[in-house]
Image (cartoon, rainbow, N blue to C red; front, side, top):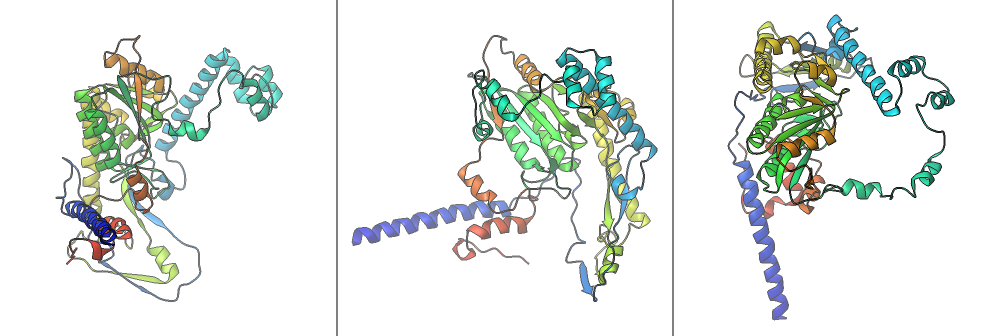
Amino acid sequence: MKRSALIVLLVVIVILLGLFIIGGFIYMQFNQEPYVPDKAVLKIDLSGPLADTVTSRFPGIASTAVSIQDLWYHYKTGSNTFNEDHMTPEHRESMQALIDDLYRAVIDGIAVNRKLDAGDVKKILDQSPLPLEEYVKAKFIDRLGYEDELHGLFKTQYPEVSFRTYAKTSAPLPFSGAKKIAVIFASGEINLGRSGGQSLLGDEVLGADTLAEQLRQARNNYAVKAVVLRVDSPGGSAVASDVILREAELLSKKKPLVISMSDLAASGGYWISMAAQKIYAQPETITGSIGVYGGKFVLKGLYDKLGIDKEIVKTSEFAGMYSDYKPFTDREKQKVLGEMQAIYQEFVKKVANNRKLAVADVEKIAQGRVWSGKAALALKLVDGLGGLNEALAEAKKLARIPAGEKVGVRVYPQKKTFWEMIMSLTDVKAENPFDVQARLKVYKRFFPAMAMPFTLMFN
């Protein structure tokens, strides 16, 4: 009996000790000093829920009206969906040049891989779609058949592996060796905080904290001799992009860093790529977009149709600047333009410094314009055309690993730990690191406040 009571007491002590350690960790998290990168713009939102008081009438049933106040550079077309009813001349110019490059890359790719004349390939594509038999005659495809026939055709030549097994691979064969090249996948819209979840526009979130941590791990891992950063991102937050770039710069000072651009490495996706010794893109990669746009949605028309009134109470002239209930005033517009101009100039300067180009030359190819990988090579925004294999070969070369020596591959992000899987159940993903309420949501779900060894107070 005494032994059972002693065991129970020990268990209670262990639990309390664990809660104390976790509580101490939480306390440290809440008491970290706010820090922003050099030349970043820190915005303190004073026009949020505490400044907006909402009163409602009986809502009327009518079509919704949404307008946007937006500011942009000539070729930065991300906002055109909201504030234009047709393509601007600059939008059409850049898109036509881009799709022409992409079309040429498709033609060249088919010609090379199918051993056909590029002119013949273009004729077939220009006439498409065609009956499938025509593609067989043109040697675009080898045969027509069903999926089960395909399995039977290759089963004797290649071993089968389940997708689940393939997806779990962290050190893919045939890449095996004591010396490692880290391959870090950077996919999604770039935001502050952790990766995971979806952004406002529905894209996967690439968290600056997560990617910076992976770059740091690769930098400090003695076995990792070089790093390939595989970028597939449309951009996002300038501050978050700069956080990632800083980690990339620290890494490149210690070991080789090679960028492998996937389908998309534009705007912030290009920002995070600039510190590499070599940048590779596919001919079809969409990159560049060196520019900034910003603004806000003005929803007053929608609120009026729903019978909703909003009253704004603020402490200073610009506290309600980003309220969705009114357009920018002239002074507010100048304030936003100033912020955007500062970010744009910093972007252009970083491109010039990292790519060893004159600022004036970068300005000519910037202005938010997107380029194909092939065009980016001619403009010296990338160093070569190729995919992940070419980037790995270059990383091995820069790390001075002999050509005949085997090298291993370490893939990031790696498998989640048990604790990371538990945290992922909280639905609090890619949260702002300064958002105390988001952190509280995580901790309160798993640890009752009464069990914490301290009290949290908010004034």
